[in-house]
Amino acid sequence: MAVDFPTSMLIEQMAAAGRPPLHELSVEEARALGPAMIETQGPGPEMARVEDHSIPVEGGEIQLRLLDPKQQTRGVIVWYHGGGWVIGSVAESDTLGRKLAERTSCAVVLVEYRMAPEHRYPTAVDDSYAALEWVSEHLEDIAGTTDLPLIVGGDSAGGNLSAVMAQRARDRSGPKIDLQLLVYPVTDADFERPSYTDPENQLLLSREGMDWFWDHYVPDASRRTEPDASPLHAESLAGLPPAVVMTAEHDPLRDEGEEYAKRLEEAGVPVDFKRYPGQMHAFLTLLMLPGSESGLQQISKAVRACIVRYAKGQPAMAAR
Image 1 (cartoon, rainbow, N blue to C red):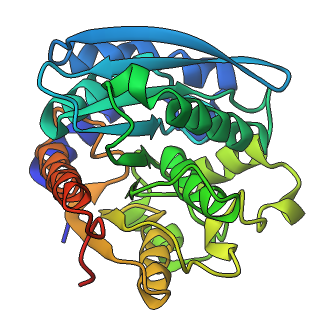
Image 2 (cartoon, one colour):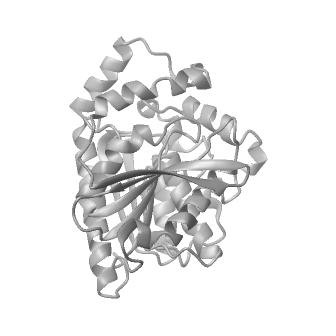
Image 3 (cartoon, rainbow, N blue to C red):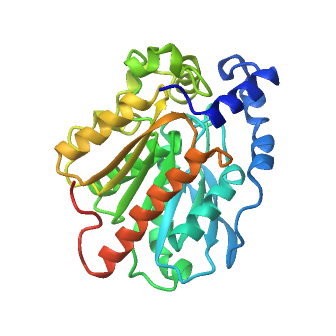
């Protein structure tokens, strides 16, 4: 089906504004679009606590933002923002993070990993893991207890980092992750998949746009199949935490996200998968779109179920 009416109207508004496509912009020009995105999202729900933290990483430091909901904290979500490892920020994902915290009764930690091209692969991966370890070590400070589920999640490039974190935590024996939220994740660098070449999918994100992102993040194409860059290339997906995987019908990343969901299931990992018809890339973070509300409902339901099963000492999600 075609994109739904609200998405179509948004695309028309963007076209009328005369903004060049992403791949024709410089990095600085692309990042300058962020403040306008913040204005469209609004402030988000009030939190009981909002704290910014600096943590040391190799070669510098990164910033984390803790969003603690007003209700009792029942879990912790480490959220990695999207933006092709080049654009995006904690500030731009603040409203989404607040909504996630309110809907799930979880503290949400937004991660400001260092971005390309100033910091190329694997810096974002290493920063993301350092943030995950820090959160795991500070669960009691964050939530008042260590006895609650730890969840990783993110959209697009953030979904990529979340999938990689789940694999790295498995391979390094921790931190223990109870659920992964993979929202239209980047899992591969194959631009010849049908979802990449379909003209109807060249919308907010295009094939050329993804090429632009990868060229900044991993310019050495021979390294793009490393599992830390493309988690679909991991030798095995067995033993990973249960996953929520959502894709958009009109998204170049659709096929690789769905193949990752299939491989997870084949490896015995419980998967809550949904393709959103009539939606384009970034629908979850475009909070003015109805598709965003549907995505938030799927995430909230899965997280609440994870919390209940954790409390009962059961697996985070039953297999389909």
